[in-house]
Image (tube, rainbow, N blue to C red; front, side, top):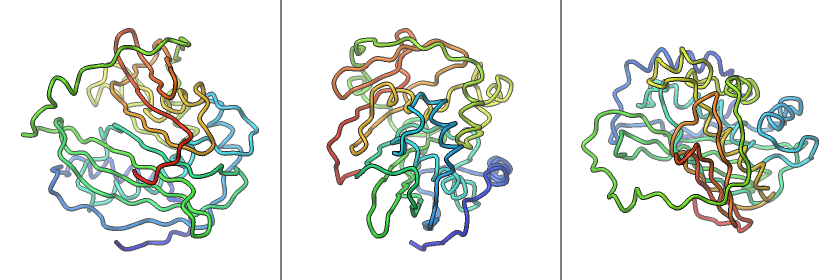
Length: 284
């Protein structure tokens, strides 16, 4: 793998535009080649005003010195988009669905700290609905990895991959409901402004319908961040979350939790399920 050191975080607008223009020419398949490049951004400092906007839209307490456990994903997002918008990335950026994330935070991260971020594509894999890419983001202080994540992104297309056995798809019983949240229609636009993720499926009903959704849908990373803000994520620990079904905007959802598990449901439909604990694991 080749490291490419960047002088600054990529501007998202041209990156996303390039990805959109190239999307119709992509032919996704699990055995395709993918970029073997690690993008590295040294000496990164957090924009505190943008951080505060993110904390407000996700429900985290503002003014704390420690970064929310999900925030390094936002910092690494422009690097991930640069990789996934390139000609050598085989999945189309438009319509790509974030299906899961695993986060390991090794210690509290001061908002006023300086970090080195790196992002790379780890693998492609067959999925029963298409092809899935795994993207890894790491934050370092000096030589030490202080935060790392592994996200999967699905490009839907026809596939011969066998569906999961019925037993594996069976839903667990709902967790005890703790809160009901009424989500405004503009939550996707507000999160996009704070995070930079301006995927059209999240912004307006018209642009969402172009990709098969009846209305705009909430960002997966907003739903998991909102759950973790309610759950009380530790400043060092492990988070695992799966995005099971889109949250249509506007809408009403129920947040449930028990022990180290949390979820978000709309009626009987499970949108997000996850686990959070304070035990740091070396595995991804």
